[in-house]
Length: 351
Ligand code: NAP
Image 1 (cartoon, helix red, strand yellow):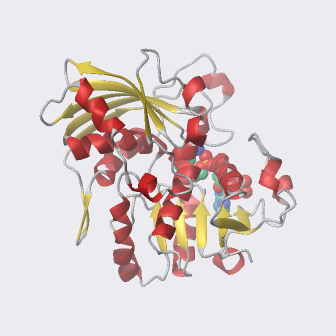
Image 2: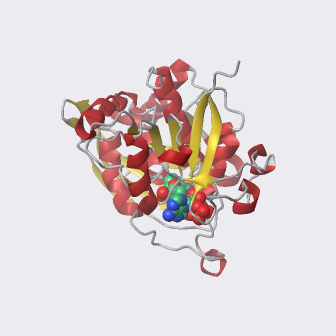
Image 3: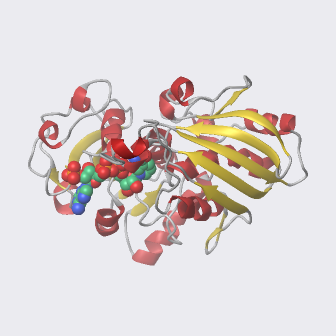
């Protein structure tokens, strides 16, 4: 008997949607029931609607599957993974939640809503508790659970053990972000090859507002934002997958680089303790050689689910600085959402 939980993928044709399909094709808990995207794709077979761009089995083996309209009366499953753009997400995700689905969203539409968890299982698993507030607030049986912006996700993974061990006063982060972060076709090749673009619309704002929510504590009225200053400077660079971040951080008690490394090395958060299927054994890989992490050498380790920290050293202005790398479309998108669903399952929220 196959007791896997049926799931729907919304936005299945896109950059993130394809990664959902590839991961879910062999997932131990979930099985794909419906694939949906826009009206342009509806009624077509997946291989006709989607230009598959990933390694491995084309279309994750779902090429012949007929795509359905992304509406609850035609695509309902108890678990919905949404790789929709923010516009359609703001309309469709509440409809699925109202119909009783747990919607794991990649879009920015509801991330900062008071009653919506902005979830990274290693960082803030207790934020799942917001679901009760959300259900009371809307009268829904289902709920929307968001994963953060991909740049914020990678940063929060490195900051979480530092907040827990020392407390953070201020962070300054300069990113070098992959083109896949802009979806497909994304940035025109003539604009990005041999170039660095010092602007990604709304990216700096998202990082600056999401980090205090991610590191905040669950209270009776929602999340009490963490009290730290965050400044983000975001750049697009000619890299396919993987966001690199140069981070300076002011910590309480002025710990040494060795103490910071030890806090990261000894961090054993909940997904690793629960042995969730998509959780990497080690959430932060600490590099000690002076020229790592590097995108081409490190980003695909653990299927892109761990982050990489290197060059932890003294900063004359903030106290500590380091280099950080994480996979934007895996940890920062599809893999992160699936890990959120695995946590919800482990906590008994999927029935
Ligand atoms: P994308 O490649 O442009 O894919 C967008 C998907 O949305 C496609 O499947 C498209 O279907 C579907 N869609 C567009 N309009 C629609 C509509 N009106 N109704 C239903 N479906 C519609 O974008 P992406 O990079 O995968 O990003 C998807 C979401 O994830 C966005 O919210 C993005 O901000 C977020 N995100 C992306 C990354 C990343 O690194 N790329 C990281 C974190 C979060 P058709 O093929 O039928 O047009």
